[in-house]
Image (cartoon, rainbow, N blue to C red):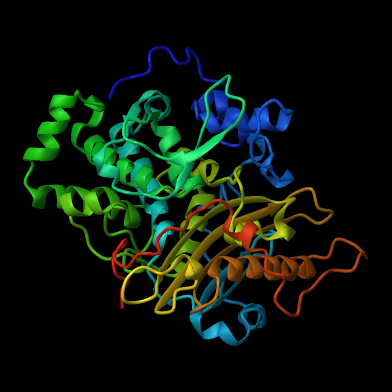
Length: 454
């Protein structure tokens, strides 16, 4: 590991430090520049929907200046309607909805919000929080040093990443097309890029490598990144119990420090089997309410601090191909801030390809999403956290369908004019390709994640 020599001499204005596409220069994330070129027609790549093209200056914390904001008492009627959207499967859904479209009258609804499931890749939000908290601990009064470390520190992929089927976009200036492939040994990008791969493409390999680096940042502090010999000595000679303690410190301690409940939100271990073998962890779990609290603390600027909260929201801004809940066509013109995670199991080994996202023993799908539609006649701003265990059905499409239904419900609550609203009473037509995108799924393998808490 080393520092990138003279990547940038100066930082741009703070409004430009963002990870929509215009954040390419300040973050050095290659994907952002690549997709900017795709929009210009000079590079072949995915189609970016209008809601993913907002400039960074439009990203702001909705509850900034409201440190005392708390989730309102659940509204009975809205909670009833929310549960009704799940139909006969309501018993295997956990849903929370916060409507801030009328900021003077926030409304909250929930259904089975304390149902606890393995979060799958949603647990990567905890890894992100761990990074932001540890950076703040190392540089408590120096935001520029935090930015510089994220942008200039290079990470190299190695055996800690394990095996991963998730692809990430790879592009260099001059390439005629964006290539999507798995992370390979030796791939070297800055921390920002690995964070982007973890959140935008849900790469398990990126997450595991970031967890390893988080241990190193925690240990070396301002001396991070340390030279290879010191890193090897720490990782290979430190007693395993001490590494486990350090892992818990960087992934669990930040949760209560940001006002969240460790009893209902926890990422217990590494996102690779190699990492688990070297630093054993514990179980992982989440509830719809705990994930909603994560979003609320972010919008309040209370995920560590205002800088960290805004960094988290920028990294969550979806500027890639939308999948699962976020692929709902109704959201195409909206900005979405999104993370999802799945865990499916067919029993007796791996699920066959035909049963991808259709687990018969377990079929967890989890979505965390903020939706902003500022250019509508009556702007919308709302948050949804959705956990489900609908056995035998494509859970990616299940969430896509719920995304459409909830958005129509929000449009109905805040009508923009006399145009008729489309309110599907039956499931929307399945668009499996759109819902799944090019994502290969978080896992179809039993044991790839910690077992769910019971």
